[in-house]
Length: 313
Image (cartoon, rainbow, N blue to C red; front, top):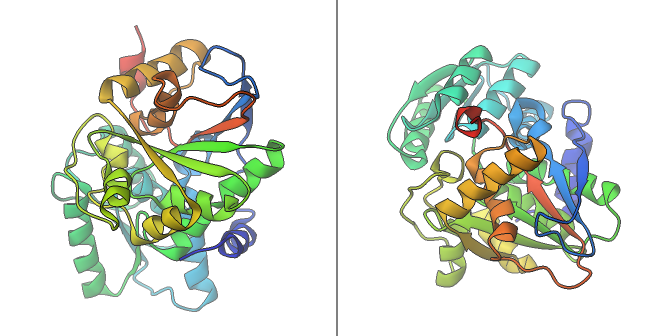
């Protein structure tokens, strides 16, 4: 379990290593509520996603505790967490080894190699890469950086919510995409009792939705357009606990609605984000989420490690 205090401590720890990303208020037309709609442009973060926050917090906390081994760090991810760990490791001069599924987009593989990480492809989905990475970490003694289910990781991700509170007055709701739930856990912990959080998932990877329905984290089938970034087979234990404690809801959108939302962001604002990121916007554009009169709403645009070729006519 994590709390706002954990997020505040993470913010202090990673200060100077991450960017404070801007927000943009959106004019009516993106299903914007009368109270106002703001986009948190977290895709401008180092490494191209919010995950740099958690990666820095995990590694820096280990350094502070004298628990970072000479072997460095190991991570498994559909791409973004691996890129974030590789970036943080390079910045902090720590060796990094990352495991990714064979389905990971080439743009993310190229970025990992540019950052100097050792890259290994294993399995067709995140769960298989995770199994290989944890086995390797046990063999070498390297520090394992989980993509979404470690307290330091979740608390680090939540630091963007503290920024958001400083940037936008009197928010009512935050919409965000959910994969394994690390971002949701950190944001919901940071905003507990202040702003409600609504998670959005593609129907093809409904890990949080299934967990809330079952009363516990359960495995789901992984497929669809956003599987490279939201492809967790099961929501994290921390994320589930925080969601239940803080009343997070889960909404589902179709792959077609995600594709349309991503295209809309490009056509209207020239913002190129991942399909996973566009899921949060799809909740608005599809009508899956209908803001109340006067509701003040923020949507987290959390990652942009994508190939924009399919956005260009």
